Length: 266
Image (tube, rainbow, N blue to C red; front, side):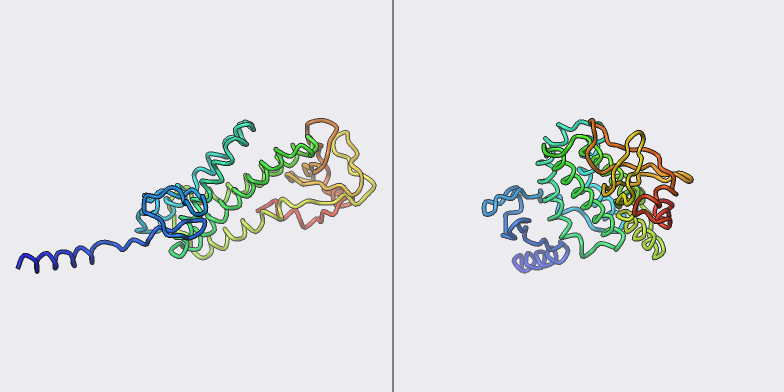
């Protein structure tokens, strides 16, 4: 009788407890112990098991979990704003490991995520790729320092545009179909907003510098009938070459088209 009761209790316990999938290596997919923090097969650091067991009881919790999962990317961004470039380079290996771990967790979450949270994840992945590119530029000694400064400045603009998308998720809210379409439009506008233009005339004057034909420039901002334009190339000092240009001159002397102003009004 006691044995029968024990068996019934075990069956009930199994029915009530959620089934936990075996932990797999995020690098080679080998099965690992639940508490493994490192794969001996492919030498890949592993996320902590406790992170994988986080509750998935609703969209709000999913949003919070996703924001927490990628919070290290927002923290790392602070070093760029503080201009602590030694910390930027020194912290990047740690950020790479954290991103690999986060990617492994995300792959398990993804099938259950609504569309808007998949968009959020894509933006965080894009921010990470941007950081990789920026740190690569910082380490490249062959790039002119003025050009390097221009690349960093343009990348910070891209980062700010990514953050505008992320800000929509700072508070728990419901995204309807029209709001999801708005998010998609905002994301797709970023590469258009930050595209480069070629100087097609003999030169384009930026400040006191006449930038010759064939060089690339980026429009950082449009205010009224003028644009703040920056050369994406070498300079005579450690600062990027930039200046105000009328939209008329910009269209006349570069590959800019007047309809491109729409990219700056969204």
